Structure formats: C-alpha cells, structure tokens
Image (cartoon, rainbow, N blue to C red; front, side, top):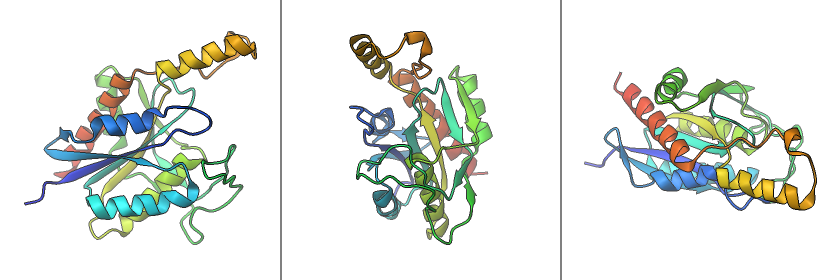
Length: 223
C-alpha cells in the first residue's frame, strides 16, 4: 500500500538575493515523516508562466493529502499564515523570467478570490503555543506568492483527489539580514533606524513552524 504523502514547496532565490528560506525549509523537510505521512519538499520557479505547470506536475506526481506552499515575506517578523488568494498579478519587480505583470488576472475566467483550505486557526494556535510568533494574514500580496496560492487552490480543487492546501510566508534568515547590514554600511545608503525590513527568523525555527503546520493539518484529515 502506498504511503500517504504531503507536499511542501518553496521558491528559488529572486530579486538579487542569493538564498530563499522557503526553498531551504522545503529541502529540510523533504524525506521526513510527519503525522504518519511522508513529506515531499520541492522548489518552484520564480516565474508566473512556470508556476502552473510546475504545481500541476507535482500534484499529479505526489498525489498529496496536504499541500503547504511557502514564500519569503521580506521584513516579516513572524510566520504569516495566508487566508486568501486574489485572481490578480501586479508585480513591483520582474520575476526571474523577466515578466513584470501589471493588473493581470491569474486565470481569465477564475473567481475573484479563493480561500485556503488549511485549518489556519489551528495552525496559528499550534505555533503560538510552541512559542513561535505567527498570525493569520489577509493578504498574500500580488506577486508570485499570491499567484502560487491561487494556482494551487485551483489545481487541488480540480484534482481527482482534492488536497487540503494553503500558503505560509516566512521571514528572512538572520544571515540574509546580516548581509544587508554589511551592504548598507559599505554603501552608506540609509541610516539603520530607517530600515523596516531587518526582522529575521532562524531556519531551524521556521522549519519547525512548518512541521507543526503540517501536523495540525494532517490531524484534521481524519475528522
């Protein structure tokens, strides 16, 4: 009998950054067993055109019971558990394929918004009880993270075996913030007290947060 599986995805580095904690968390969880299920961790391309085919192929390959996609929210001081995705792509920077979407629908005939099917309140409670800062977020932005969540919810709903699915944003790694501080000192671009994007979280903590989110979600499957 094939073991039930859960899927965790993260994004490749983008925007000139050399690392993306979301991909590192997915890699760290790959191969683990959580709640009796095997975790499959994979990296997605930072491309509006590439997300749909990549997610579709993964869902078909893995046939997951739960999918949690991850992304970086620069400046976030905590874990952001996303509630909703908008059918909108409106980028402030180009994706890694050079695409700079402006006021575009993700799916031409799609719903205006789609709601995550993860037990977001239970995930939030589980993380806070574990001493990990977390909150429910009502906006996943309008860049690739939002597009990923919208595409994911569309794909899982259409699957022969619909999966519980959602998106979680994670903060910078401390090493990323340290590098930014070095660059700021070297270039003398801005006084440190003016910067609002210096929050970070250790990789071990953010990885534990996603493991707990998976546990909370898997526990809901049997109810």
